[in-house]
Length: 463
Ligand SMILES: NCCCC[C@H](NC(=O)[C@@H](N)CCCCN)C(=O)O
Image (cartoon, rainbow, N blue to C red; front, side, top):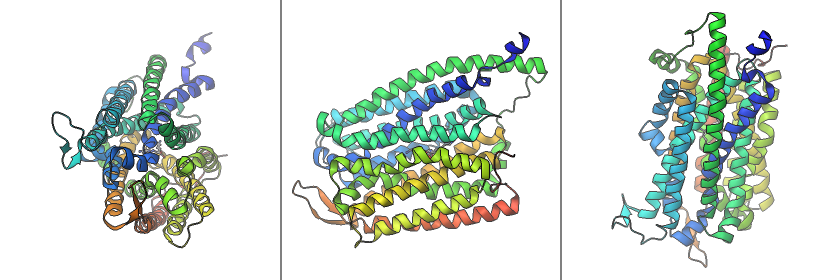
C-alpha cells in the first residue's frame, strides 16, 4: 500500500505519455498557425495586394519581438521564475491573441486602402500588412516561449525515462500541424475565403489553451507528489534554481556556440525556405497551385515519420555529430539543385523535397538531445532559450532578406492576373551558401566533441 502511494503521476507510462500528447496538441496547433499562411503567398498578392517584400516582412514577424525585444530571453526567465504552468498558459494566450489580430488584419484590414485610426500606412507598410505582422509577432513570442516550456515539461516528466524519444515524438507531432497547414491552406482559402485557414488555426489554438489548462491540473498534482517524495527522502529545497551564473557558464561553453550557430544556419535554410517553396513549386516547376502547399510541406511530413526513427537510432548507436554533418551536406545538395535554372522538372522538385525531409529529420533528432548532453539539466531551460534566441535571428532575417531580393532582383514578368513571376535562382544560391556554412560548423562541432568530450558520438542508452 505504501509502495503504491509513493508512485508519482509520471511513473505511469500511460499518464506521462498522455501528458505529452496534451501539450504536444498545443504545439501542433502552434505549428499549424505558423505555417498556414506560407502557401497563400500568391493569393495574398492577388487578393490583398501584398508584395514579396510585404510577405517577407510578415514572415520575419514571427521572430521580430523575440530578437529585438529579447522576448525569448524574458520568456526563459519567466519560465524559470514562475514555472511551466503559468508560462505555458501565458504563451498560449499570446498565441491566441496574436492569431486573432492576424485574422482581423486579413479580414477587417484587407486591401491596399484599408485604414486603422485613419491611417493606411504604418512604417511604410500597408496598414493590413503591418497589423498582420504585429499579430504574427505576438504569436511568435507565444510559440517560441511555448516551445521552451514544452522542452522543460518533457525534461521534467520524462527525466530518467524515455527523454529523447519523447522529444522526438513531440517534434514529430508538431510536424503534423505544419503539414496540415501546408496541405489545407490553398484548397481551404479557395473554397471558404483567404482568411479561413487562419480562422481554423485560431480555433485550434483555443483548443490548445484548453489542453494546457488540463495539463496544468496534472502537473500541479505531480508537483505535490514530488514535494512529498522529496520530504520523505529528506531532499526538499535541493531543487536547482535558475542563477545568472548559469548564463555565463553556458555562454563560455564552445559547444553552446557551435550548436547555436548550426541551429541558426540549418533552420534558416529550412523554415524560411519552406515559406517561399510553394511559389517556387508553382513558378519554376509548374506544379498545380492546389497541391504546391502539400509538396512544400513534404519535409514536415517526412520528418514526422523519420525524427523518432533517427532519435531511436541515436539513442542506441550515437553518432550525433556525424549525423548533423550528413544532414547539413544533404541540405547543400538540395538547395544547389533547386538553384540550377536548367533543372525544372516537377519530379525533381518533389524528390528534393523528400531529401530535404530526411535532412530535416537527421539534424533536429541529433541536435536537440545533444544540447541535453552538453548541459546539465539545471541549465537546460536557459540553454534552449538562448539557442532559440539565436535561431530566431535567422528566422527573422532570412525571409526578410529573401522577400526583398525577390522584389528587387528577381521579377521576370507578370502573370495574366497581374501577379509577379520570379526567378528563384538568387534566393536559392543564398540558401545554398548558408547551407555550406552549416556544414563547416557541423565539422567544427565534431572536432569540438573530440576535444571537449561532449560524447556526442556515444549512444544515449548504454547497454
Ligand atoms: N526540444 C526542442 C525542440 C525544438 C524543435 C524545433 N523548433 C524550433 O527550433 C523552434 N525554435 C522554431 C519553430 C519554428 C516553427 N516553424 C523544430 O525542429 O521544430
